[in-house]
Amino acid sequence: IDLATFAAGLPKAELHLHIEGSLEPEQMFAFARRNAVAIPYPDVEAVRAAYAFNNLQDFLDIYYAGADVLRTEADFRELAAAYFARCAADHVVHTEIFFDPQTHTARGIPIGTVIEGLLAGMADAQAEHGISSSLILCFLRHLDEADAFATLEAARPWLDRIAGVGLDSSEQGHPPSKFERVFAAAAEFGLKRVAHAGEEGPPAYVTEALDLLKVDRLDHGNRSLEDPLLVARLARSGMTLTVCPLSNLKLCVVPDIDAHPIDRMLRLGLRATINSDDPAYFGGYVNDNYSAVAASGRLTRDDFVTLARNSFLGSFLPDADVARHL
Ligand code: HPA
Ligand code: ZN
Image (cartoon, rainbow, N blue to C red; front, top):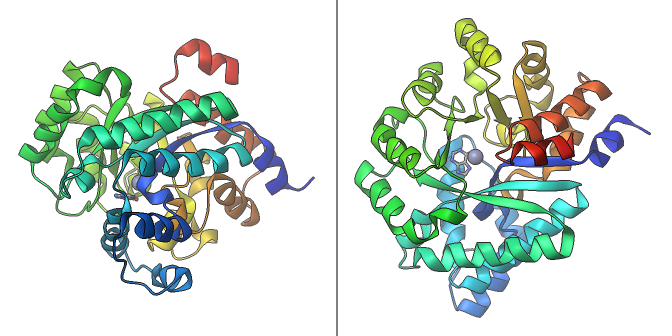
């Protein structure tokens, strides 16, 4: 069998997936119709045609607009169900799902509607597909610290069902330091911590995520490669990087897939993983990402075994469950 087929069949975990980014255009139209929400596109083809981005912000503008069709607990449950069906097809047996409560609460959707809908979808997936999952609550970094604190407070009744907190949205100009106190509060609640850093932002933002946010995992991290001392630190500490090749391509973080540094990351001893980020917007789910880098011809079968192993090693599963998956 060829390399992509081999990679596709490996059991794996997904550690970087924004559930709002799994909203396919077909589902967007279905939710819009039943919730009587207007969407500024005539049809599914027009939506797909709009998915041409020059940078992160181009994408975020369209991604936040698309999320407007999500209104009810059933919407979030079905959104999750569609994503889990793709996980099942891709041999994703565990997934740690990002969600952006502020995108919804700002529109008057209660945080409980979002969380209860997602938790119901996660329970369905465990029962139907045997897929385990957890939730990571992300703060939107373009909003202020007070808004993040209010979001953490609003989530208090569900914190026993949330694995950790994350940091996403517009990176440039919104350094991790802006959320140092919020992340310290999250740590006090026993939550894990992750942050997007070094996607568009400089290596210094990665260092801030480590030193100030005390992250357990780093999302993207591409620009760490510009700083050899930072690379050495990440490698030595066994820090997991949740790398997203097709996202990097679509958001122009790399000029083409053959220039993607996933092979360099592995050769440098970094604990890299492969993930889909926002699959409905970036042209593919986990196995599409594995295939894209397989096609670029710089990785071996052993590398793909390492990538899949890293996805479990970097997960927030209990050690016994990690061991069971290795
Ligand atoms: N970067 C920052 N924020 C995001 C992303 C991303 O790749 N996807 C969804 N929100
Ligand atoms: Zn992301």
